Image 1 (tube, rainbow, N blue to C red):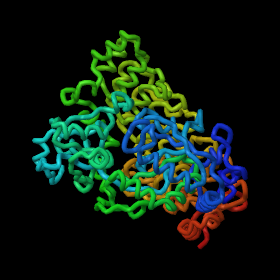
Image 2: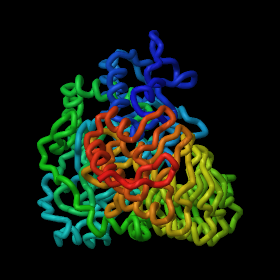
Image 3: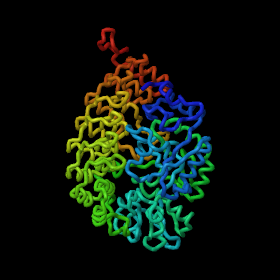
Image 4: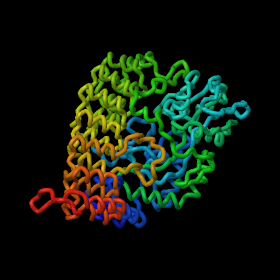
Amino acid sequence: MKFGTAIFAGCLALTAAGLAPAQEKTYYDLDQKFSEMTAADQTAAKDAALHQQMRPLTACADPANMPFSDRNGDGIDNQIVQVLAKAMHTTVRFYWMSYLESGFVKRAFGSAAEPLGNCDLVVDIPDSVSGVLMTDPIYRSTYVFAYGKDSGIHIKSLTDPALKKLRVGVYETSAVRQALAENGIKNDVHVLSVSYDTESNNGALQQWRQVEQVLDGKLDVVGTWGPFAAYAQVKKHAPIVLQPVNLMSNDVQLEYAMAIGVRENDVVLKYALDNALDASADKIKAILDDFGVPLVQCSECVVQGNLPSHGPYSMGASSYARYQQPLDTELIHVDTSQTAPGETVTLQDIKKSLAAGADRSAELAQAVVASDAARIKFLAAHGADLNARDSMGATPLTSAAGARDSDTVKLLLQLGADANASNGDGVTPLMAAAQRDHVPSVEALLQHGASLTVKDAKGLTPLCGALENRSFLAATTLLNAGASPNAACGANGLTPLMIVATHLEAERSGNVPVDDGLYLSDGVAPQQVGKLLVSKGADANARSKSGLTALMVAAGHDNAPLIGLLIQAGAKVDARSDDGKTALDIAKENGSDASIQTLDVMSRFAPVQSPSGAAAEPPR
């Protein structure tokens, strides 16, 4: 890894005739992520986005998830993508796949083993999702309560006693379900289970269809994502009221900014999409208005809203706890007495499927996703392979670990699953748990012999993967369990300290400041992890394959707090990279003002090397 505009040369090497198909040639540097780029690199990428001809694009889209997308191209996402393609003077085609499938991001954008994936972009995902590079947010919306127009219902808060008397419908994995549960609304809650097949039976299991149960008299109120309820109200003419709930909780986030995701190293495309979004703001707003999408105020969004925004969430004890405690069983297990026939899978269904020749391992994969202990035990007892990879390459353990489902992780381990069986990219269950920053899952796997030293296909250890993903609680747990603070990782041979040096105190995968903490550990900062690494013996002067030190990396990312820590730990301020640059040179080259000042001040008191190599007295 180099600093300066030279690092982006691979991104600028485009053909005059446009970009080659993804299977033949990429127009981004596969070794360079947005988070690794300096200000100068980003400027070069922005310039490239203004002048390069975009090749035809492929967008991932759900085949049956209205109002967002369907195979007819009638959804919000379908229309927005077409508008953007026109603004970028290119074309777009759709690759159909369910957004709810396990391993969706890997299938969309590829992996270390298959780096190109199936898609160039994914529309309408929360702009805080990790492992994806985000465009500017398009709009912000909110969860709502939807109920009959003449029902007389008006819910004052999540603690409103009326909620305990109403039949409430929610989606299995929705934030509003969590918010209701944390406020004691757990009984008589009807859960629509996750389904990967939302095309069958006339789309009966699409999320918006739950609103129809209010009209049918089966439910009194549905808590759902605003655009789903709006679709029923505006496009299906349902006589319902939509009541935003985003101001009702300070702990559970109930409003989200939505954006377009691209590969983490597809920086030119990100900026090209940002430009197209800005140029097409009016057309995009018209699409959202046509579907009645509830729009929340959002200063950084392309389309502004009128509904009041909650603002930054406190991410207090309840949110912090989700990284340190097992999942709430009432949120991961569905009460089948509260579901309609066909919405859940029973043991009797499994027996029939197996008798008809169903694949036991495939059934096990589905049981793990559903956190169904009874099904898992039954299938394990009837020959299901506990280490088999599913169609996305995930093992049952990596799937459970990636879902922060420590109870299922423990169950699978007790049944004999291999704690080190990796998926198709070499990702072990420990890596999956660490990247999701879930301490109980990490601890359970370590207790069953999960390896701290194994590397995935990208050359990352569990510790390096956790640090790269800002999973600082998990990283702390791994270090305290004996993970090496000096083991170099990845193609560039970066040490854990170097990876930490790329992270500022608050950041997101893109250029939008963090304001929700949705995928970031609350309470553990990069500097704290850096201090722990140093206390565990991390070498502040270790070099990457290109001769960079952690101090140089911190300078390139304008990470002044880490610079101070590294100098105090003995980092050599006068060390030079393979191309002869000191940390101060790199900071000046990239306009890292805070780093320049910190280096200037602290270097006056840091040890310097005498000609003999011994530490000389610092200047006075």
